[in-house]
Amino acid sequence: MDFPVSIRTEKLQNTPQQATVFYPVIDNLENKQAEFKINEAIVTLLNQMLIDQDYYSRDLVELIANFEIKNNQRGVLSLNLIVYSFTGGAHGMTFVKSLTFDAKTGKKFSLSELFKPGSDYINKLSIIIVDDIKKWNVDVIEPFKEIQPNQDFYIADTSLVIYFQLYELAPYYWGFPYFPIAILNIQDIIQPNGPLDKMMAFT
Image (cartoon, rainbow, N blue to C red; front, side, top):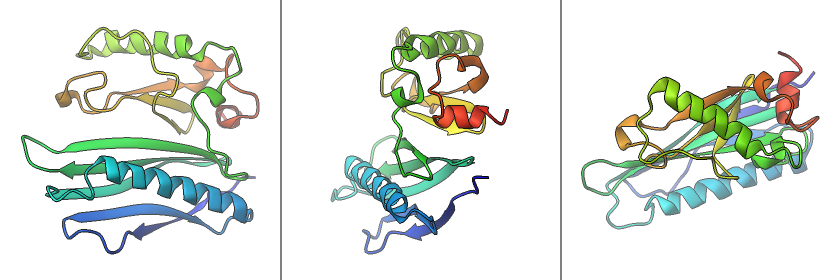
């Protein structure tokens, strides 16, 4: 049985007065190399997000960083890092980026690695999202054709969630458009023994 990964919350020290940064730290893994790889990937991505969100800018008014654990079971860890910053203007800007790992090995998965080689996962997922856009009457900025090969995603229980950044698909007032896709609906293309396969085995 794959037990949940132990996660603690740390606060980044020596930040600018107007910044508050919380981030997850993985500990107590049997495989210490895997533990190091996961924590390194988290810190690397968070640091890039902070830079992109004007963390070091003199114009920074406010910055808040936090995280959400989306899946921590069956040997699959999937999480979101969230950074909001405000430097003046009508409103601040928020970015969400996700990481999905094999908790035993520390391997980080890209979207393409969740699927069989040559499975045309882009077209398969895009068709589902097109239908959801119509069903939910999503106001898109321009007609949606297909996802990017590296589209943002996370795993939540028995669903693969594809999502888009603010302004990437829809106007600001729509927030982040999230599209949960049941793993059972794409089981014919998922990578055997990959993260989605491990989650589907318990459906």
